[in-house]
Image (cartoon, one colour):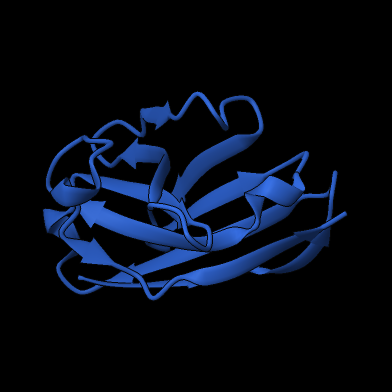
Length: 121
């Protein structure tokens, strides 16, 4: 499974960004696709995920109501819509694929290269 993120960049606080994750390869083995982020000096943090079987979603409390995960099953794309962005949302954002429905970083087998999102005041 190969994952490629896109859509990062510089945005002002209060603005919105939509990240995309293109999945290719043995995508039939994917159970869940999740989004994580890592800010400088911080551990990688789970944000949200979507289960391929029924498109059910799960979100971390820290982003619930601001971030939305969605999927285009035909195009094999997953998206992270981020609204009401804050300076503290500045981080490298990663998509990852798992054989499980999990929030745990260690249960994600495949990772994209990451895309930088910088939120300015």
